[in-house]
Each structure stands twice: as structure tokens, then as C-alpha cells.
Length: 186
Ligand SMILES: Cc1cc2nc3c(=O)[nH]c(=O)nc-3n(C[C@H](O)[C@H](O)[C@H](O)COP(=O)(O)O)c2cc1C
Image (cartoon, rainbow, N blue to C red; front, side):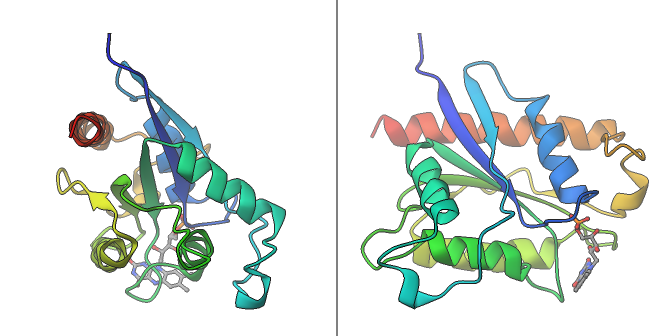
């Protein structure tokens, strides 16, 4: 039997009713057999300060530990001013440090995004892909999960209503798991 693939997921929004956090919760329901998705909340990660790199805040240490222990990463990003939100970039900057101890090194990764606008966070996703180059992560390309007009796709409890989106998330996770297995076998 194949070994279980452990995915760590985090969303770049701290908002209680965040569509991106809701999208990450929806992903838990469609995790393929043989895989597990754990959610890490970014709340409490302080602004990056290189002076603290040698003795990092506890929450950052925990984040780095969980990333390293995971077989694959799932990032769910909002779009802020055509880019990824500071909350997400800040957390990723911490986890990439100190120099020589990049927790994301060689990790397979998948992205989803939700925005209230008509492009569903597409611009943020492509910016995130640039960051993966320096972090030496291995992103999967398809399917691209852009949740457009997010306010219409969730109910008032944050449950994803859109069937097509659920199917896409399932396909994304399936591809992430098989990509991860392929990388592990090389
Ligand atoms: C500072 C800020 C900038 C934003 N910029 C964009 C943007 O560039 N593109 C976009 O589609 N939505 C933009 N939005 C709208 C977000 O898509 C919307 O607020 C979304 O709900 C944020 O994600 P969340 O629900 O997970 O918190 C912006 C929102 C804020 C607060």
C-alpha cells in the first residue's frame, strides 16, 4: 500500500469569515484516499524582523516544523492590490529563513484563490508562482482554481455551494498527491 501523503494547508487571510479560509475548509472534504490535509492558521505570526531570526517566535517555529514535516503544501491566497496579501508573504518570508534553512525547500505545492472580483485572484497566483522559484518549490500547474465572485459561491456559514469548484478542488488535490508520489520516487 502507498504511504499516506500529508498535506499542510494555509490561507493568506486572518478574516473570520474569509472566503479563502472557507475554501481551505472545503478542501478537507475532498481530500483523496491515501492523503491527509492539516490546516495551519497564520494568526499570531508577527511582522518579519531579521533580528529575530536566530531566536524565532514560537508560532514561526511551529510553522517551520509543520512545513518541514509535510509531504506537500496547499496555499490558498486572496488577492490584495493585484498581489498576494502581506499576511501570506510575511509568513512565507519567515518560513524561508534563516539563510540555509528554507522550510519550503523542494516541497510540492498547489494553489487556490478566491476573490470577490471577476478574476478570482489570478494575478496573485502568478505572483506566488514567482516566489516558488526562489523558494525552490515544485508547483503543479493544473487545474487552476480561481474562485471568482466569491460572495456568491459560499453560504453565510462559509460553506462552499458551487459544485464545479468542489470538483476542481478534488482534481487539484488528486494531482498534488500523484505529483508528490512521483517526486518521492525519484
Ligand atoms: C486591501 C485589499 C485589496 C484588494 N485587492 C484586490 C485585488 O487586487 N483583486 C481582487 O480580485 N480583489 C481584491 N480585493 C478584494 C478581495 O478579493 C476580497 O476582500 C476577499 O474577500 C479577500 O479574501 P478573504 O475573504 O479570504 O479575506 C482586495 C481587498 C482588500 C481588503
